[in-house]
Image (cartoon, rainbow, N blue to C red; front, side):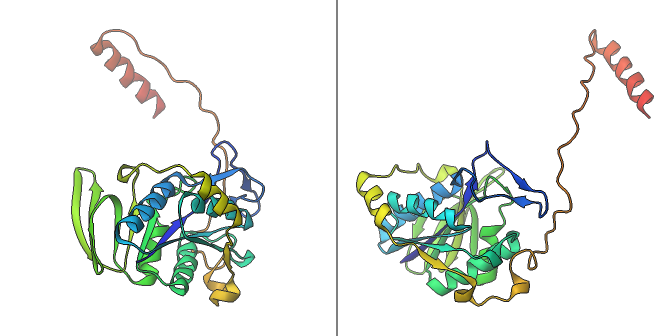
Length: 258
């Protein structure tokens, strides 16, 4: 089974900067980590490989520095890694990003695709489902457990607000996983040595052949018009006393604001 795991290198939450001209995140030269939810995706891919056989390929779209995240994934046990990187991809929103990744995954070939449920920088949870939509394959989101996976089907538990649903889907299929699915492993010394020597395959738009108006800022229907820091709000009042008195005071204050 050819298992593709999509990961994203995200800025460290203590060092997030915005480009004031494009209103997009500045990633070059910023301390970064593998998106935490993607660590669970990597682990689940490795567990499936150990259970049913095959190979795990990690794929990420980003600037050249994202190669660090791919090497970390290899140190955990992935077989190989692919970096999708091109200046033409800069500024892509979730729609354009999923379109680009889908084209890269299609070029690589796949039987099963795993993504983290969302990235901590955007928190949209849209790229995984977007990839499935562009590839026209089934998807199961918010997976907390894979009950069974065979050559042509998967049965998984999907989290919802009241518990979970048990869903059966044919393969190929894409899933997004939540942290309840497993406990990510730590890299071994042998894995770290392998990661240092590993060749990271790179795909650019010359390899994918995508139209300029489908990628990057031009191919992104989502537009951020303005980013600003909200002004500091003044402290409110604390009403004390018995409940009937507090209610009366509250009503008076609310009326004064009308």
